[in-house]
Image 1 (cartoon, rainbow, N blue to C red):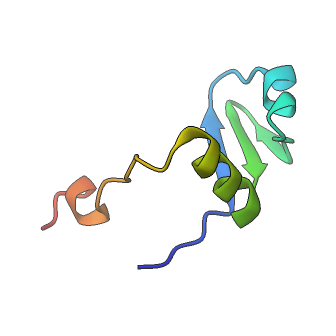
Image 2: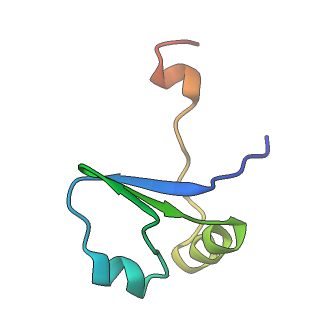
Length: 66
């Protein structure tokens, strides 16, 4: 199954200098939410650098489905 992740959403305090050092530039900040737009090049780069071993839980499992 293909997918496209277009942003990272962070709740709570953000270390802005650290985020910027990783190429993340906040485009929306509201209350305790910060949104960092990303593209396939960004996620592909970090998958290669950190390894591609993690998997997201299945949506159905998260919502209590099958």
